[in-house]
View (cartoon, rainbow, N blue to C red):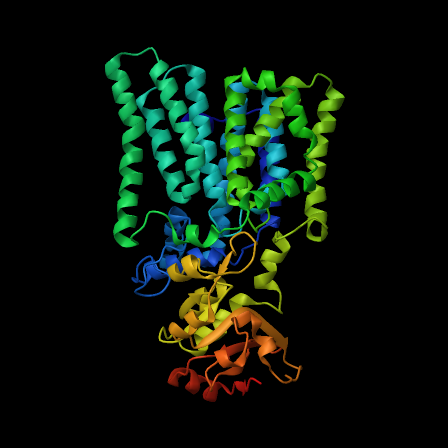
Length: 536
């Protein structure tokens, strides 16, 4: 990989540097952090505090899907650096890494600076790819590892010679990708055998092939195999708990097709599958474009199978470098007329701009939270999920004997540092397997039963936070108001259950269901002057 970092002093290189700088600036302007990122931050915080890689102290549940990213987030917490700011910096750096290796892979194998340049223009201006340079999750880490693996693979194919070093690089990078997200297996299950195929075709001695095979296989087996053994001993399972929470009995494929359809419509990309079909023969007679096409199709099939996602096209990010490299090759190498090449490139960039401007209000957007809505959970004064956590943590002095229950299981539990029941089951084994059907929204298929909340002796049930302005006088609170707490009739409630109004700031109050009595909660209600209300 070292040759990709060789610099040439030329006007082109200066222009390329300026372009990348502009794309980095665009990604910085699109920066945000989403509530789900704080799930990983909570696990990292507990590990840094000596509690282990757990959601609640003493409860071993793997509610994260990004082992390597979670470990990286331990660094700022240990050093006393703001974890959100650190995640921004790490994500933007990985964004540059992805652009770097994607560009060099395109230039080297297609022997065209035009293809490389167009690739990073289309990729870097894509709103989804740009916004997920940040977000607080592992998205850009996975994308950068994929791009590095592709670069090393393409260089080996081009040279028609395989040595121990590039095979070790592929093996280690593949291990890191698997430990970043297990769904990297969709990519690796194709890339691994493909690398082995080219390795066996190499005109070297049998002994050298055996050494090369060991370089490819052993690091992956040791790293990933060791990780799996640790997961079995620590959590009792290889698959994360989120797998059971997110896979329901609903028609996932239909959700996945709708998810992809929204992406192609919103980004004006519908003509480009037709362009690929028109040049299918050229695509599949070129080893590099064939690899890109198969990888993209496999990933799209995976997205359909799992039903897409509720976040704005995050699942597509790791494969976008491949898709735009293929698209740039089609435009530059297959389309003859310069005016049409320019028009097609302009359509892609304009489609990204249109998506950024219009997707928030698009009539076809269903069950998809945009960057605006994802960020608003933490920035809007009428949501303010992070401040809810800070207020609760400060009020109870981070006493883990107090238990809260939330559906927004990110910033609130992270800042509160209280024992928390994740009502959607991502961090709860029982809910993930036995919870009620909640919705067809991806990742939100199951939810707790009210009986389980009572069994877990939850003190304050928050659910999806109910916020009201301080100048609003609360009316009669009835059972009909308690749907977010999984309460359907008054007989479900203990006789002394009540609502608590908790001031979050000067303008907004949070309403929580006080379910299981606690001396600590009673003390805080009294000392803080929180109002309580009967339930009619």
